[in-house]
Length: 235
Image (tube, rainbow, N blue to C red; front, side):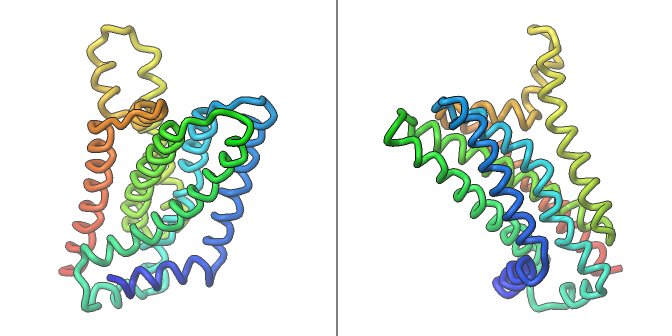
């Protein structure tokens, strides 16, 4: 598992995807920070992380699109399937590599708020809550991304398919705002909406049910990816 993880991390920087992701993610994050915080002279950090969640929905599929698609395209998939590592270890290694890239870039983006501490009151609990929320959302997006990547050898199809699934999860939250307050479907959408769950952390409160939701969705897509390769190994 560790060997695959190192190989995957190395591949991000021997190609262009890793550099493109880091440059774009940090540049967009810096621009959003300027417009939502510096230019508006506001210490409210919720808007920044909400916009970054939308950015992540677009950027993370570009990071995960090669996870398994590239293995199929370059005919190295059989090497993975016959390697002395479990399928669970193989999938988790690729998942953790993408999560490491995202977590590193997220932490760097979050350091922007250190600029505000001498001049404005930034609640540490609020900042940590937003960072944790975006990390959990990113983890979920990555799990969806590697699942879709395992279905096709076309990287563009993997990226578009991942964005489509993520869009469904996000749109559910927006549709939920248009429903009547006592409509039963609103409760269902509240339970499955990534956006609604994300808002639970933005005020600095730890929401156990939302944490379990993100972990559960991540586990489901990782498990489905493992099942895909379990069938492929024996076929």
